[in-house]
Picture 1 (cartoon, rainbow, N blue to C red):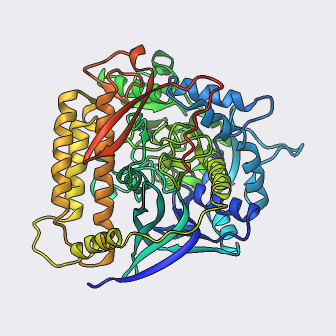
Picture 2: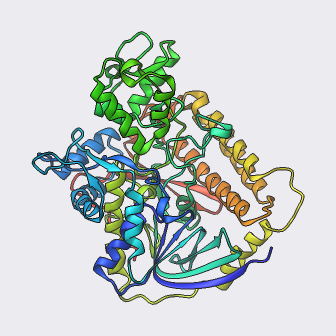
Length: 562
């Protein structure tokens, strides 16, 4: 198949039309309506990203009586100090203002008779959020000077003199190789799912905690471009309802359900209440023979039953259907829970790009926001919106005196040739799907997946890295009979690149700071020697580890890459 080249120019390129990307576009128009913005989305902006199915709460909000620093302290404690307080504070200061803007756009936020938001716990608001993504997408669609291209797979960043000047992508429904030149590029592609073998393999492998179509593309293109990344070893493992992989927070916070083992014993206090400890406790109880484990809902009221049924219809209807099909409501049966496979996601943990307080990466012209941006865990929806606003404001300031630059012809030719090679018919003994399954098996067995109860040692990580390298070499020989299959090949290669970074980071943190998230059997205890950030850069085909001291309270990290 021959691919036609189409060149586009814009002031600002946003890669990813999810939460952060949409809000960045809205911010740019609000402050500099004359700027041209191009959003490239792999799926369709109306129902893409983490908000595609909707949510029933905004999990990051400064409720009455609290202040932004309280949220910083909560996130710092949950991550056992390995966070960027400067990033958390700049995000937290915007949580309430972005929430109010969302409401003005049409989001239904539940209120009391006095007109105040209905809080759920110390940091959450209850919403009717089944249409939260269409609300954002519709608002973006009305913006002048803003263009959205759906079904385009951005594969690489365009570089010149260690500066990002655009990107390359391939139309999934046309045979167009896009060359995009921009004064600034914002990566807002989300995190990485599908690196490990999921809870429900085979036909049901899409039933996972994080969107299965988030492949770590933004991470991969940044790694290849030489951007510094941080804290990939802080994997995220969600504690979820068994089989449906539906959220458990609604049960724990909404009706006060406690974690109990098969003997009916409440075990959560024994292990701790941080995010990783809740998973670790469940894994440990199962290993000790006291499983299955549950969230105790037996005995809740009929009104609470009704509330849960409605809540899960908004975000995880499979759980509601499971209750209905079983003929038992939550009040009549406890909900079995389990940990998911590990993910790399900067919205819940601190994994992602190493950025300054304005969300500039270490490569000039490149910015990051949302799940792809590191150092700032517990973002959730509103935190991603806040980072989209912060990055957009920085971009507006930084491009005032910048001209568009033309991409390097040799680089353009190399990336187009790579795509054409995958589309050239050849006899290959395997498919992208088969190599992806092999990758997941490697990560599951040797890099701390479900099979090993999330535990690993250095020898296993060395084996994992060796096997992932071989799979990447094999991927170069893949053949795609159409553009959809070509996308699958690029998604596989993105995941393989992220896998190597995860393995390198897991090996570099020679301690166990977060049980289950990074359970190193060679170093089962926490060490003050590793109370630091573990960062990395991709150089000459290898991942170079960089150790950085923690940024102290009240300090900012600014690298001023403009």
